Length: 230
Figure 1 (tube, rainbow, N blue to C red):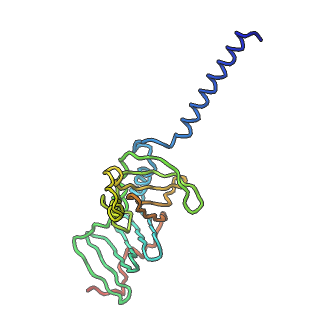
Figure 2: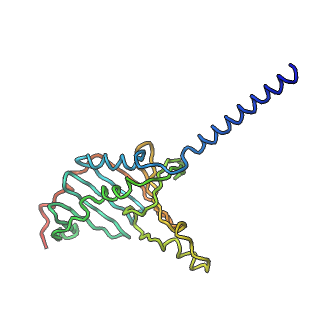
């Protein structure tokens, strides 16, 4: 092979390697960057729940903090365990009914149905926002996540814009910038199944395990017949 042909072959190889390298960078970073709401699993989850006649949605932080929500048509049931204290509500007909199992009584809170659509409303605040994609290992398994620059009702700890600054102030360091102190929420998916929700504010994080079912016990949506009103 003469010198001219060698130069041409080397040039072709170099161009080929450059193209392969560029393609590799593109594919390796395909989960990075900002994505529109139209491609969001979270938006699809919202649409699915809105169109279901019945479902249950449970989040668990630990043995002392969990929330179980069930929805059937226009009736909801909410069982919240917060710092070991349990409260149960049936929400229907525009009212909320607090159930006390220990003495089989219930209290009526008229014109109070703020928790009737709590899960749907929390997802509704997120579904139209742009988000970042990523991957993270939790308990030895890697999940795809969608990260939104917003706080949601899916947390037990109270997060605000000051949360991420508290530790820096205590350490005598400079305050973080507004961008650094922004609260973020990650929705982790196994396929299309939502399995975890994490709230992040600086170095503070809260990870909730999520369980969603298509059914719930019909008895949850009725005040037990042997309960007396107070």
